[in-house]
Every structure is written in C-alpha cells, then in structure tokens.
Amino acid sequence: MNDQLAEDPHTILDRLQRQATRHETPCGDGRMIWHLWDESGGAAPVVALFHGGAGSWRHWVRTIPALLPRYRVLVPDLPGLGESDMPPVSDDADAIAGIVADGIDAIIGAGVSYDVVGFSFGSTMAACVGALRGKRVRSVTIIGSSGVGALGSAVNLEKVRHLEGDERRETHRTNLNRLMIADRRKIDDLALVIQDWNTIRSRLRTPALSRSGAVMRAIDRLQSPLNGIWGELDAPANPKGPERVAILRAHRPDADVRLIPATGHWAAYEAADTVNATLLDMLARTRP
Image (tube, rainbow, N blue to C red; front, side):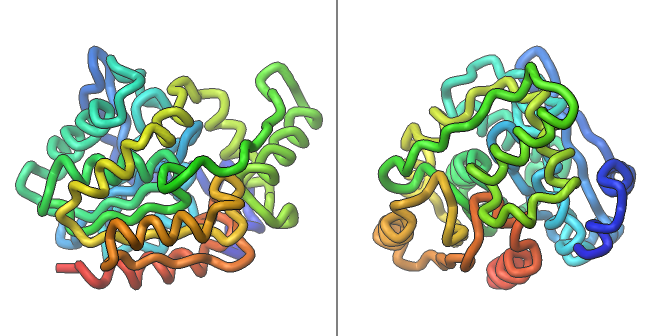
C-alpha cells in the first residue's frame, strides 16, 4: 500500500488493469464488463468481488493484489456502473443479480464453486447471487452493507458533475470524507482519481436497491457460510452499527461478524491491511 501512495494514481490503476484478462458477458441488450486476475494458471479457487454503488472494479484496488496468487480474483463493473451497460430492469435486485450470476457462469464455468464478497451495494449483489446459486457459492462476505437493519443516518453529498479543476477535486474530497473515508488524512490522490472516474460513469440508482430489504431476504435463503465486516465509523451504517451486527447475528448465529476500529464505509481502502487480513482469514474457512 505504501508503494501505491508514492506512485501516480493512473499508473497504479493502469498497471493493475493490464494484469487482468477482460471479459464481456450479456447485460440485457448490452454488455457487462469483467476483469479476471489469475497468477495461478487457473489452479486457484475463485473469489468474486462486487463493488459499491457509484463504483467500479477500482473500489478493490487495494484488495485485489492481497488475494493473489491464493485466489483467482474476478471483479465486474456491476450493471449500470463503470463500463457496464444498464440492466433491462433497474429496480429489482434479484434480476440484476441474475445477470451477474450468469456472467460468472459464462466466465469460469457453471460447475465451478466460488466465494463472493460485496461492498455496500455490492453486498446486496453478493447475498442475492449466493441465494441464487446455493451451495455452489462457498461463502458470502458483506462489507459495509446498509441493507441490514433499519436505515442509518442520511449522508448529504455535494453535487460535483458541473464542477472543474480544484473545486471539483476538493468537493470529491468532502464527499469521500462524509460518506466513505472517516480519516480525512487518508483521502489521497488515488482515492480522488477513483472517485472521479466512478462518479462520471454512475447511472444505476443503487441506494434504493441497497435498502429494499433484498439483502436480508437473500441472507435468509443462503446455504453458504456468511461473514460481515463494518467499519466502526461507517457513515451509512451509523448510528445503528451495533444494531446491524446484532440483527445479522440473530438471522445467522453462525455468521462471522467483525468491526474494524476507527474506519469508515470504504473500509477495504481506508484500512486495507486490516481488512485484507480479516478477509483472508474469513475466506480460509471455506478454501477448498
């Protein structure tokens, strides 16, 4: 992670993207874009990472290298976000998850098992894909889900698309601090570049999907082990973070649920070393 801080953000992202194989799968009449990182020659188990709302695969820039080479890491731009086209139905989480699950089957094969990890809106997709694919999904890990329990505090964000230059950059910094990263000192150039790229390409309205109850309905149907991670200072979750943990454990007493101290919503970025170690520990329980 320290090496990333010293490099140009575009260099970091371009290099990581070049290390992956790009795949395209159907998304209605359009296409869904995926990247697959594999340093094992196809031998390692697969973990699929689903990014958050108004995001792209770039949300996982500090997670992907940590999972290699122990895993093949498959990361989409979810429908209506990043480079992927809009889904034909944009208000049904299960329908969107069906597109995602079919895409995984097309890339790795319909008989291959895998783990799923979702951040924020991606948690809804992870739970729904897990429910759709049953025991083929080895485990489901949700990170920063706002769909568990009652609605948290509203987070007011500044409009940014009409801004340019330093004003645009500083507005992104403000929004990241309010929503994503609790410690303003950890909002670096890489985070700002990712936020700008993602914001420009965000079309799917994900907050309603995240809070539709779909994640809990899916969790109740899961046949897989369940893990949960929240940052202690997760803005969308607070002030109901402990309540969310209790609700998840009530639904799934066997769930492995952990809080990351002094960390905000985008925990996999803000506290990458801690989250990566936690995630690897969770995934190890179901590693074939």
